Image (cartoon, rainbow, N blue to C red; front, side, top):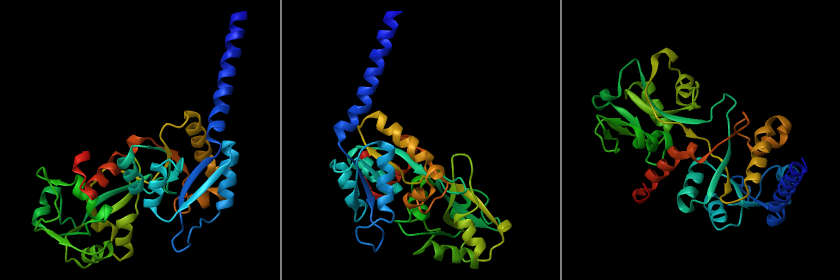
Length: 300
């Protein structure tokens, strides 16, 4: 069995060399984050976040605080940061611009939602199916509204004809609040809005909750159409880094809510359900959405 011992020793040696290798090659792990609105180049809890990442990775950490997502995308695309915290649209933009980013984890809401779905919601059963939409008044938000226009434009179809925004049955409004007010007062029959959701479940919240808060009876509201799931924005690695780095990050971040709740709250102050591992396939809808927003037909 001497050969077996020799083989085991060789494998262990190779594993240890690989384990040490990426750390020695990187020297430091460079993280990109967005500055807080109105706070200059600051992020609350920066020192605690830096310390937590350093302990998890066993390597020094440098944090670059970008003024906006354009600057963050540029920093990762040009190799000045190894890992960045993105919104959904910012990640999709980075993926389209350079194909150099790999999603690692994304936050989960306290309700279990991993993203949102655009919906078409009606009152008092005024619409029973999507094909009825052309004979009713439907409020739709501005062209840059994700749930209010972009996702419906991307996925909603009546008799196999895509929604362009110029249909005569559409009533254009400046905001989600304006659309909701029109449904409440009955001046439109339906509006495009959103719901928190995951792959299996839709949660009471979003537009439906706002309509109920405005005084509408829950029983009077019904969802006629829903889009694909749009995942919450991910943490993303620069492509081509060692697979062990990704594995270590996933283990650290998916346990963070339980192991270091204070650090988690600094890292993800809006969604308190922890982190879940994600892959590129989870963001197909987001990438198609950004293509639609930018009119980037050449990349379809």
